[in-house]
Image 1: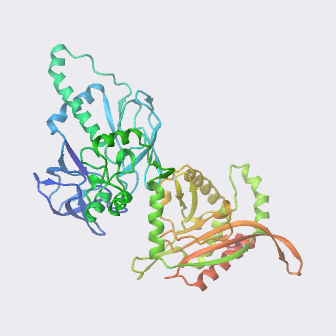
Image 2 (image 1 turned 90 degrees about the vertical axis):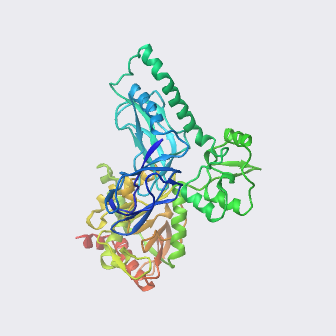
Image 3 (image 1 turned 120 degrees about the horizontal axis):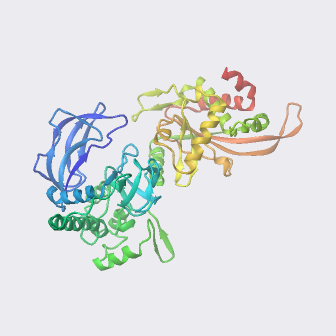
Length: 519
């Protein structure tokens, strides 16, 4: 089967690139992960690897020409599939039924595959334009895929829990108003019966590839996992996979390299394992092992990168919220009638933005080798949300231009979406400083990890009613909160974060000062 290789996202904001050099020629046999060409963006020279084994049948650009992201870069005959002439009858069958494949689109920068979390429709269901069809999980968020047209679902190409590829068919549907082609004549039926049978056989063969991957020596694994196996001189086909249908993850390869697991079982044993497999989990001897993937895997990588490259330091302070809590209590019901959910958080966010005006270093980022600082005009303040798919940190854009009510409305929208795991990629990008409200669950003091490339994050503890002396030396009950800052000690020193916190604290302890500063 001939298939176009679609040029993927190769950098944030990159829409085209120049072909610097082709490393293969038409007619060449290539292998998965083999470099195919060098391309130049306005930021870097990038090498594009193959994603399948096969033969290059066409190069769509000449050296020096400009290639478009998300457009075909080259065409290849995929190894182990029939040629294009054999595939023609399958296309005819599709045309005859009026069905069309829905191609899984780009669902986030750098995302090449996703897990089918749940199908919201079944084969044979009538669907409407923009109706949600399925939920898919990337390593960044839970995304809902809608239908492009009204019609009927004729085929779902993946089962729940399987891995779907970007730019590949996700499901097939028959457009509304299109009926199946009328019965063909006996002559036509006779003439097309064999090709149709061949097309069905080809489809069955393709469907069997993933189901029997471990039994025919072709492991189910991403290019990054295969690369790790090669670096460790391991035959990946011998590595038992812990994922769905025997999918191999990096941890599986490392465990195999350490001798903690034996070679993959025989074909019959593999079939039995596949029959009894539980998606993303295996049980043995009263224990359960789950692969870390999706949002949790992305968070793990981000946290390791942050603590291993940023020298963190923590600064704690106590804030008296008695006056602010009273102010919010007096406004809460009034704004609730207008549909505004006024919590304490919008006040924290706005006060933070006001303090940043005088301490712009808190709203900056440092380059990789710590030689340059970039200061941001917009205060895009992130809020860590404990969602059902893991920790998400959507951010409210341009807080310096927004009122407390505007921030409250944005906060409500983002937290509701985040808890369902449905935050748009745009809301997750571009944060400049973050707040973690750990006190909503419990706890007073924390040591939060910076959300790289930001320079600081603050954790809010729970509000406690505690005794304190007033100006007259009298003991009275006050509403107090402990806050814990983590800062990047390469560019933020203790004095800076202390002075910044004092200003933020002043706005929160004296709401009138915050209102005056808002002008």
